[in-house]
Structure formats: C-alpha cells, structure tokens
Image (cartoon, rainbow, N blue to C red; front, side, top):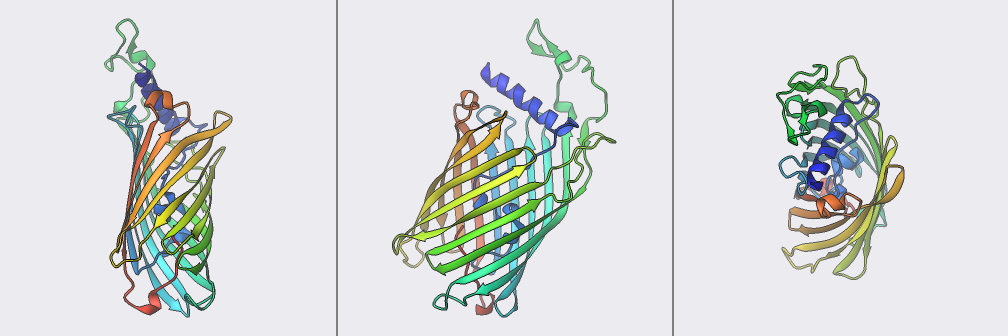
Length: 358
C-alpha cells in the first residue's frame, strides 16, 4: 500500500512539476558529478590527461518503488583539446542528455556544444614549479521537454467503491495537450570558470563556478503560459592529497542552487595505485547529500562509490542509500549510477597538459 501511495505521490509531483505555472523545473543530477564534467561546468571542457575524451553516464532512481517507471537519466559526452600558443589550449565538446521521469514519462532532452580556453598562469611541467591554469568556458544548445498525456489519470477516473482506476471515465480536465505534449525546441546557454593547480603527480587542487540556463528558457507544455527553467548556480571544489607513493585522498564538494532549492554533496575517496605497468588503480569513497525540502534541511542520501582506472578507461559505480523520509517507502534503496570514460592518450608533447584528478 505504501508503494502505491509513493507511486501516486511521485506521479503527481512530476505532473505538477511540468504543468503548474507557479512551479519551475529543475535539472537532473548525477551523484558522480566528477565523472560528468561537461554537465558540471563548461569550463571543464578539455581538462583531462589525453588528446580526446568520450564518456557516458547512466542513473536509475526509484526503481525499488516505481519498478516499471523509474526516473532514468542518460548522458553521452565527447571533448577534444587543441594547442593554441605557448602553454595555452582551446577545447570543444558535445553533451547529449535525456531524463525520463514517472508515470507520464515526463522527459527533458538536451544537446549542448561547449568550448573553453585554458590559460596557463604559471609552471611548465613537473619540476618547473606549480602548474596553474585558469579556464573559461561556455555552453550553448537546445532543449525539449515532453509529456505522454495518455498515460495519466485523474481523481474523477478513480472508482472509490471498487478501488480501481477506470480511464474510460471522463477526466474532467481541459483537453489542452492532446495525447503527447511538447515544449518544442528552446535555446539554452551556460557559462563557467575553473582554476586549478597541480603540485606533483599526487597533489593538486581545483575550484570552479558555473551559471546554467542564463537565458531562463520557457519550458511550459501549455501554449500561451510561461514556466521558466530557472537559472542554476554551481560551485565545486576538490583536490588530491598524497599520503604515500601508492595512496592518496581525493576530497570533493559540490553546492548547487536552483531557485529556492539547493543541495550540497561532500565527501572523499581513497585512491590506490601500485605503479606497475598496466596496473589498475582503484578508488573507494563515500559522500553525503544535504538538501532543503519542505522548509527543512537534512541529509538526503549516503552515496557509496567505487572506481577503476585502467590504461585508457575508467569505470565508476555508485549507489545512493536514501536517508530521508522517503526511505520508509523505498527501503532506503535510492539510485544506481554507472559512469564510463575513455581517454585517448596524447600522441604529441605539445598537446599534453597537467590536470588534477577529479
């Protein structure tokens, strides 16, 4: 019974989320934000140890409560870096994301091109002082939101006596959307800034700032009614602290605010590498997610993660353990994430760049 109640609650939330003119949509997110760089900040375009990078991210949420209609987020990205002059670089990238939520299959689809300029502030490789870089980035693209109206039901279609849903009954709602509703394509733009310093192979620090949806596009599904995609502020920081030749700590933190809603991810991981040829480096970490909800602040989830770094491929797995009141309905089973990145090694010295580990 509690599962049905949660299912109904989430359905109503998603439906109102997309239609109510007094509400504004929010972005999907990844717990492994450090493994989704082009989604996190356009100023992370080109910041990797290699010539070009390909990546995919997949998130499955609420499958324990909504077995047939969980919230799913999928993303693919690619970026490549070019040498400009001295130790400066220019990078371009492409990100495609699709998020599908709830009974009505409310979906958000984005395609963004990104570009960044990577300016060296000091250093010149290990042994020549600390490498410092300032990166400015921008992202522009298109989005589309849609809703499968035919999958929805309303209170007038619920038979109280038989406790059944009868979709043959009139919904009593204006037929504004038809079977499928869509926003059409809208322009979406973001900007970002990142600074980082690499001290040696096991010690680095970074910090970044991004502003998403700077043009606040209209994403209303109903013609003639405005519902904006709110601007989102993103602040992130982290680094690597070497403990020994084989072990290091990688703390990371993220703060994001979109309208009245905000969340903070904070945690750390341990990285072990034996430095043998073709050795697989391994990371194990944990983090917490703090959010504001219903005018209160609390820990939303505990995130456990593991990552394997092979020669050119990294694979990250994480699981969100729900700690909020939703845990009573999903038995604390929150979300599963998979992240895979492939980095093609540098073939020329002039295109190589020292980067922190994220």
